[in-house]
Length: 185
Ligand code: 5GP
Image 1 (cartoon, rainbow, N blue to C red):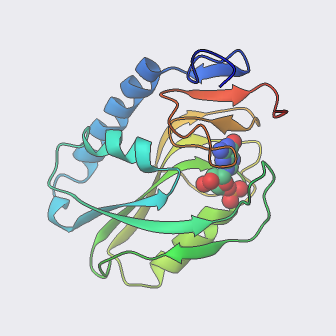
Image 2 (tube, helix red, strand yellow):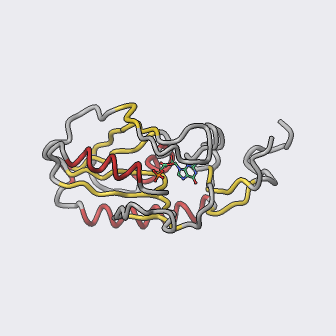
């Protein structure tokens, strides 16, 4: 490895550091706990793989309710920073969501194409409710008009990495959200 630290790289500009992320997640968790306190027994948080895994791990520990966790695998991007426009369900939930309150947990809403597809799909399965929590949103790109019920941060139209988000499967383990200054090398 060229630099001494993978986490501290001159080629990465920090957008949200670990402390900033945690502070916001504590707020989101409190809001979710308040809104679902009477429905906690039927509440399932569904994380969208793979990008959600770090955010979801922190978020569930900030929601003081007896919730359930499940996962869905979706693929909308190849190993590039451009949307392919194609959404594919690669893994489905392990338990039926019929009669349950579903809170989808996503890393980032960009064009909203992925969420549009998924929310429509989930609504056909007879849940009591379906809501969306996303750590990040690029409002300039969200042409699908997807409503985000719990949003961490709005960001400019830049390709971000870290805290679960990858570039060609790398950088998911960065403890912060950052922007790659250059994708060469
Ligand atoms: P959408 O369908 O909303 O355009 O794209 C959503 C998915 O694209 C996200 O779940 C994420 O996997 C990927 N994506 C969109 N923008 C970014 C970005 O800035 N960085 C990374 N790493 N992935 C992104």
